Image (tube, rainbow, N blue to C red; front, top):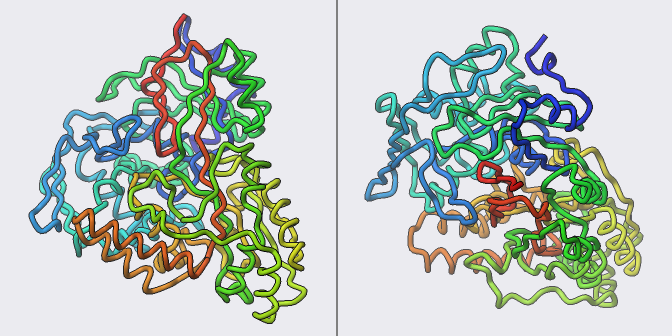
Length: 534
């Protein structure tokens, strides 16, 4: 029996809180969903990253809290060659991995762990590449990291040199992302020997501020302070994720004092939160986009004219008013207006049902029936996908298109939405991971990302578009990068692989006695700086 299966919890966060040491400070986060897993590499779900990437793991470099600026983490410093092809990371010494009931590390973090972390994603022949059947590495594939990195060399135990095939302007920002969270090679070897390889995903071990304790599926996750953390020690002793998918229930728990902080409040509840003297509300513009991705490989959605017509059928302002309660702005580009290189000169498709009908007729489209997939969970870019799908259904009906609304469990939704032959369109979105336009455009829309294992759910491959992205990544000239990304957005708008829907405002409600929480522009949740006043 694996470690994971023997570490189940009692049914609630309160049982966990009761089991904590006397006077221990416990912080309860009412999270919105269950993680797909605890290995940050194979998944793009924010629930996975919040549950592992910002508690259990560290990366070579990280973002300063509340910013997209890079600062040292497991690498104390780094050197970049003049030609931009070599990055040499000088690793922090004395960093200890967590232990659990089945494993106690015999050594500190070193270069072997860095190489293992990257190589297991890079090569299909690596023994740990598909340690769970069917997993893929969407980030690594979509960002073409396997093509970018020529070699990774262990100079010594505390020095690692990356050699790239070409310069990559966002390389450091990419290395700060959770998908390359550093994993213990020694732990992986021990699991392999024990025949419990799946525990790399089920019982994670890292170097982060919190140590994983246990998970009860769809109910609760428990972490404890890492007493050996190399950085500033967390203020709280126990961190509990009380998994609560319904936004109204999360708010009830917050108001009742059953949790201290929650994500993604329902837009209709914001005034109530502001009026509650026991609560406070953080807000900031979101670095995000919500979208409807057509499957551009299936007729008639392989025709840009059809996609443009459907976009013109959408009343996006009505959607903003109904779904976001006005707490968002209409999206015309695939990147948000708060991001550098946003092309404000682009004109959005006008809401014009009559023109849309005429365009569909001209394209020979009659009696079209299609699927629109609706996410089962709330995300920062999409507070209610089911309601959004219903509005799309109504708008498309006005131009003679019949819509069937489809949904699946969240993990299955993400997996099935990347299967070839999917009918119709899928509602999804994205919150930026590193503040660079490439993180939206390449990860979600490049030709590489349209391949198996990628995140391009429109399966759209426009070579001119992808070539512009490649040029932008290869130059360190900021102004040149801006021009290239602006040109890429023009092509995107002409080809319309998505209907861009909204850029939402981020809101984080919390109890009034919560201090030290820093909202990230990247939409993730970290708890190493939070505290509770008396």
